[in-house]
Image (tube, rainbow, N blue to C red):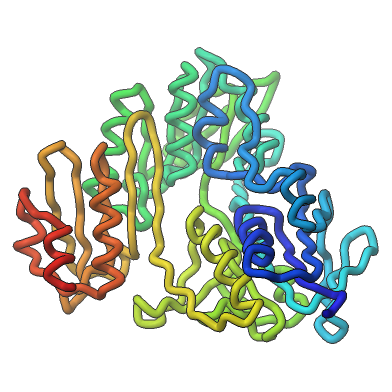
Length: 412
């Protein structure tokens, strides 16, 4: 047995999932998990939800506790930054000079929050949310009556807005686009989400740019492009993320919008894999279109899948993309890729949930999205229809009494 073993760069959901899977699949050699934080791997979805909304002090939701890492004989290298990959020697070099040898290497480097580049924007004046430490800092600002400005009306920004309202803050959301949730969410769901936020007291300013940000005596002042001035106690930006590709690029791997991998999640070097937010992969269900996903399920399943292929499984990665968001009592979910569709069919259900079915040119189901209390089961059924590449009648899909389960039986 080799003494080099498996090395994973990235201590988030993807890295933790891969490390656990390697052991569960029978790998008995060394596993080294390299993370930049002091905390063992923890879940990130709660950071914009429960970790902010709770009245009492929040704690990380650990994926792998230190005790579990020890029980699985996974070497956890904390507070460590990988700075170089020597592909000829199969060595990862850390910032402190330590060198770690590998047989197979997984890059699970994730993505970093996109930075504001406005006059006056810096880490002191504008917060971001990626780590548990970020959440603790933001949470300390969310006292009842304080004014919070959220820049960006994507999932992170809106979840923070909902949590802040639950803590009693006054919240304004600024968005340069003409509507909220511009990426991958149909207009009807975006309108329902915006209406719930407005009902909760959130103020929206859409289609507006920002001129500059100024800070003085604990107060923040935002000057908008239209000349309006906003004063607040805290600002958080949620304007997207950029994949961490610098290590891969520096050692000569192919990169684009993410580290480029094949459908086995292998990079242009067959001994190096990449998974999670940092990689772009071709998806067989969508005609080989290369996609990059920032989603919990992709992080978890991609890490596990890469681990199995590192052990020789040689299986294509075809997990259907799935996103969800909780805001107030509302849950919304999206399964598949709405952008791959050319026709959208809307359906209301008896429990007042709202669904959209997204069909391609041949009326194959490419995606489904929904909002409401009873959507989970229907979204799961829609996923099964997507996997089957089901061709569906738009008129049938729009019927209020439609049973997706019956459609599945017809295809069996």
